[in-house]
Length: 93
Image 1 (cartoon, rainbow, N blue to C red):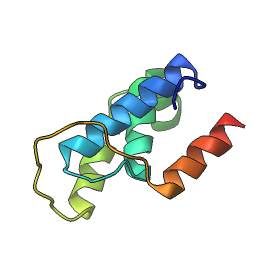
Image 2: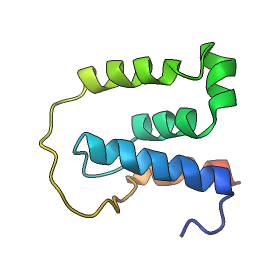
Image 3: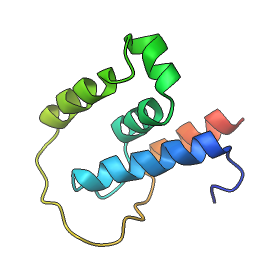
Image 4: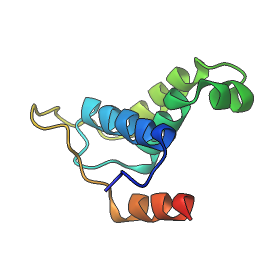
């Protein structure tokens, strides 16, 4: 499914999947995509946040605002929610 994306876009999805898995989310959500984008492209984080490491502080704020879920071990292959699929489709076009 992701073979049509650039290497950078695939890296964003990889980091997004990792972040979603870390908090026990059953799917990759918008905040996971944002975090994945900022982790995959440090230049982008530097330009918009002033520091490539500022994404960590943003992630901690997002984490605190979400409900706590139990992290269940299992496959890391999480599905994209329907809204996130549209985001990726629009980015691809």
